[in-house]
Image (cartoon, rainbow, N blue to C red; front, top):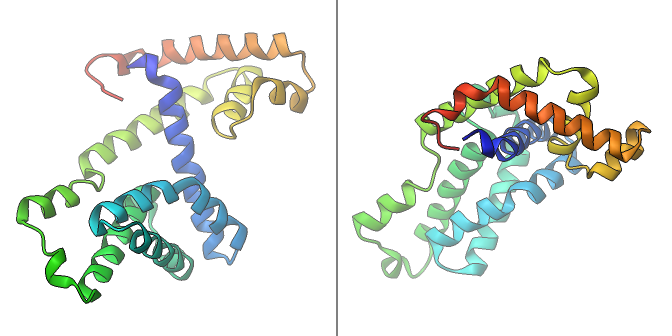
Length: 201
């Protein structure tokens, strides 16, 4: 719903940032890889743990995933899926490889319904497409705001700055920043009103 707009902006900004970090990692930027790890490893680890059922094995699989990202970042194509969907695909593959390589393979064999539940953890392509469309609409709506409203909102949701930090960065009074963010969010809600009907965020 429109009330969940901040959450949607945060999700979109996360995907944008992760795409940028993957691109930087492909260029050999180790700091970008570290930042990507910090932002996404909780999702990677959770899926690996669900598949492997062992925290140490899940941590090792997590390391495998980011090693693979470092080697293959240039192969990531944003047109084929979000950064998180790509990372979860790599995670599932690495975790299953580790499970198969285990000496206790037979103990890890799972019934079909459990295997299917693991597969369902990856993002649904249709849902992913809906999220991408919402992100596009949010970006379009942001572009319609006055620069003095858009800038603090982007700093808040795309860069995670507090209102005080934004005020210091823009050298504006805190009250002015709060007002501009409030007015900007009101305008965004007005522009994105069509999302309210029948859309679950």
